[in-house]
Every structure is written in C-alpha cells, then in structure tokens.
Length: 449
Image (cartoon, rainbow, N blue to C red):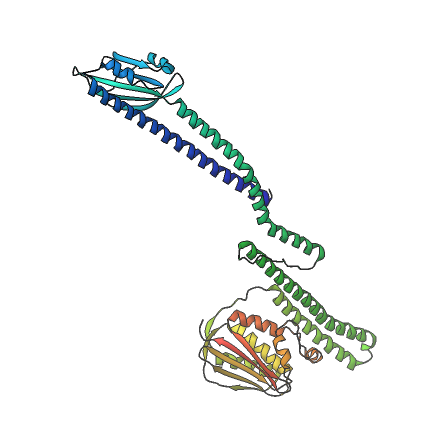
C-alpha cells in the first residue's frame, strides 16, 4: 500500500473511531442522566403524595386522595403487607398496569422496569397507616416519551457521524497530499537524476522550520555530498589512469628498445633494465597507496606512551643510512607523548622522503613542545611550494611541479596518506613554504590521550 493511502486510511479510521467514541459517550451519558432525572422526579412526586395523604387522611378518604394523584401515564396504588390493595388507579392510557403483579417492600425502592415491552419508572415508599400497619404507596410512570427522545438522539448522532465521515475522508485526502507532496517531489527528482545522470536539488519555498523542510534540506545536502564525491571519484579515476599510464608507457618503450637493440648495445640494455625496474617499483608503491586510500578502512591505531625524541632519532638514523643524506637533529631534550609507533614512523618517512626529493641540502628535524602538544618540525631548503598551491598539497595526485615530481618518483599520494594518518592519530599538520627557500612541515602530537 502506498504511503499516501496509508495516511489517508489511518487518519480517516482514527477520526471515525474518535467520533464514534465521542458520540457513543454522549448517548450513554445523556441517557443515564435523563433516566436518573425521571427517577428523581417520580420519587419527588411520591413524597408529595405521601405528605398529602398524611395531612388529609382524617378528612378525605384515602381512595379519593389516590384517585386525585394518578399520574398522567401511569398507576398509583396503596399496597398492604398481605399484598391486598386499598386502592389501585391507572390512567386511561396505562390500564394494562392494573394486571401487573405487585410486590411489597419494607424500604424505599426506585427503579426502571419494563412491562409488556414498555419502559416505566417504579417508586415505592413505605408509610405507617392510620391503623398502625405499614403500607406502600407505589407509583408507576411511563417513560416512553423519554425513550423516544433518547432514540431520536441516537438517530441524530448516527446521522451526524455518517455526515461527518465525508469531510473526514476529504480532509484526510488533502492532508495526505500535503504530506506526500515533498516526498513525491523528491521521487520525481531522483527519477530525473536517474534518467539524466545529472545531480539536482529540491526547490524549498517553505520558510517554516518543519520536518518536511528539514527532510528537503537533508536531501539537498545529500545531493551535494553525492555530487562532490562523484566528482572526486571521476578526478581520482582520471588521475590514477594518468599516473599509471606514464610508467606503463616508459616500460613499454624501453621493452621495445630492448627488443630491437638490447643485444647490440650493453649500455642501452643496462639503462633499460634500470628504467623498467625503477618504474615497476614506482607502480607497485603507487598501487599500494591507491589501495590503502580506496579501501577507506579505519586505521588500526594503538596509542601508547613513548619517548618521542628517541623514536625520531631512530627514524632519522635509518633514513640517513638508507639515502646517505645529512639530517640535523635539534632539541634533543627528552619528550614523552601518546601515539602509535608505526604510524608515527610512517608519517616521518613521508615527510623526510619529500624533503629528500625536493631539496639537495641539509634537512633539519626539530623537536619541541607547547602547552598541549609535542611538535616535530622537518625543514628542507629546496624548491619550496608556491603560496597559492599550499591549500592543495593534501589533494590526491596533486603535485606542484608535474615534470619534476615525476622525475623524482612522486605520485602525489604521500601527503594524502599523511593527512589521513594524522587525523586518525588525533594530531594535525601545518605546512609553511616559500619558493626557492624551502618547506617546513610541523606535526602537532597531543601530550595525552
């Protein structure tokens, strides 16, 4: 069942049920009150008759007093304890009550009775008679008119309920359309996106901060994210294809060269092998980096308290031995902080490797601290980065100097991975650089977890 029909059905059923409950309650409450009122009125009438009889019994015959107080639609009688009657009088319309079997009561009785299908109010009041015995003054009054009024009320309530159902169905339909309209707009927009392949957003004209407007804003925000991620994916695929095409072309060209002249020229053979080997290594490293980035799996971070100075010193020593580059350490005081040993080493190698690739002179590593953070600075005195390119250095495949970067073996993924690792460690990176003066990378590590 469609959502619109569900809303229409549920609202209609709920309103009709509430209307039935309300009208049924009105019917029973009114019926109870009006019948109670009839009982009280009849009881008051009997009390008046008893008072009249007691006041005039020595002057007027009891039978005449009873005859004078016969109800318009009912019966009055004086009933003795032996169930004999000293007077029973009925109205012309209720003569059938004379055949009704009477009962004697020792106390006051007020109740509703039904006799031969007709409703009555029955009231019996005991009094002490002139001879000292106890007799009952009993009055039976028809409430057929009251029942007809109650039945008329029931018919009116039923008619009102039936009439109210029509506007209820119409209003619930209108309500469901109002609720569904933004959702229908979203569905149509999604279908248009599916057909055209172009991302679109909803036009939000309602300025009220309701749930439907919030849903529309959420949809538009989701469209923005999808469009941004789609564009990034396209750029990623394009850049990855471009980066992989270059080493593959180099390998293919050198392989052709080897096939044609490799056996004749040993120097060309050695040059080709070195180039193919170098490009194969670069492709492997770039592929591994691409897989690490593409997986977007959470980093397995294991924070522990370590001696930062000692770890940096060991990493620098390994780097110097591997690449035969001069690295100067400053700030050799002992610093202790919380971090992941392997991830921090990976970060340091990325920064040191960039300094090696884009500078020829000495590299400086400084260890310091602020009130909340430990700092590790890696400074080179190389080509530097233009100011306008600094915000882009963490983008995938971005390289300031394409030709120089490719020559040095860069893929434009190192700083992207460094940014991901830094975020996972709860740290941050700052890069300051000037063209032809060098670059300084500052890593801020928290002192505490």
